[in-house]
Image (tube, rainbow, N blue to C red):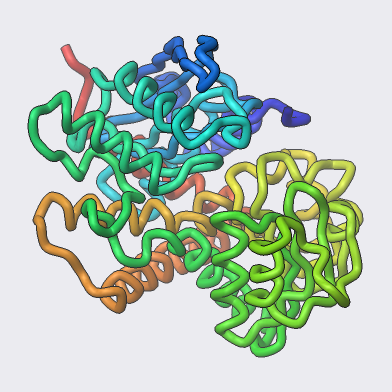
Length: 412
């Protein structure tokens, strides 16, 4: 479980943005309240015939700027408050990158590692059927997140389509290419983290060539960020997964090959690191790309990195933020740094609606354009208002949602 409430953290960040923007108390009430919350019971018939019950969630935090958008997590520690917090962050993330979406998040409180393939499919399909009334390509578009992947999205798309009576590829993103997925979607979040890292080095006046990086997390975000950064000439010197970290490997690709074969990072010639030791390495860039609350008031004082680029959602607590700010560390916040995933999810949704698909180069160029524009807007907001980059990012995202609320008015 997280050490501090993700919802309390998200609400405090929103409160700060509302105050900086000098919005009204009516705006605060509207912006701090989720639009729709659904909790469902998800029964699963295990392979041995036993039936187990799991809690499932789907939160649609906002639909003011368009259909809500957000991932589906299969993780034993998720609960309603965390899901609301992550849906809130998705709302500001979509607005910050100027996508025509609101924010959502969902999932099941289950350890996906404990499921057989058949059990995973049954659980995914039953969860989809339970949230079916509130999802759809014009309502709410799920995507992969922690513990889910393109296979789960294929099952979700098929379950929705069977009930609709025709194929509806746009109901989810992050699907296999053959089912209407987009080129570049798998690596998109990591690619966006890499773009943010290179730009942050520019801001700090550090040459990216040979700049050192430590990455906490070797999953869908951490792996692809490591590959992208290595290809750009940076030196990834340490990586960790849930079991701990290593340094001293020859390359990310060789470490990954060892991981795939042996299911651990302990490749020959590497030295083991604890998670705390990785966070405290003397590197140019630290990328927390695991779960929430990695950087806290206790762990932040030991961070020696000049730049922290948040690959995970909500990896830093307010206490950790305060310490890093005091120590002059540039923090590129999650709603900017890891927005590549939702940006390319948007591209996938657009391609599905048009039934016209882009090349990998087109996807990459469009991702770069949106990431760079958003990055420079945050940089300008932070500089002109003398606020942190997190505050600047939230000011832009929250401000756009607030403006959309005012323009649409209140019904009835």
